Length: 132
Image: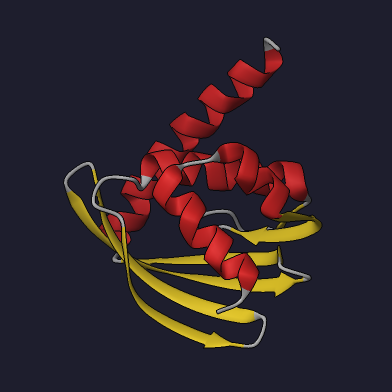
């Protein structure tokens, strides 16, 4: 298993945000299922992934993995606001750092629930960082 992918799995188990920041490549590109433009850079990717670890934590489980070299496709299930969420994380690593992270979610009801919760969490993170 790719060392970066092993670190990602450990971060998902531990919610270690320091390790998460260190795992993200400075030039990382994050593709959200609800934002039409790519989010570029370590800081914005960190914000999205930190929020996601909180929003998607209830019953989160990777159920399938397809790995090829520095690329991983990880299917997951979880629950948000009582709604079943099925999604896929598509991750590209470079030197064991996350270079690209793309999230796809289904069904539509789940996308709407994730969108609402992620928006709230990102606002909280933004407010918290503004006070520091």
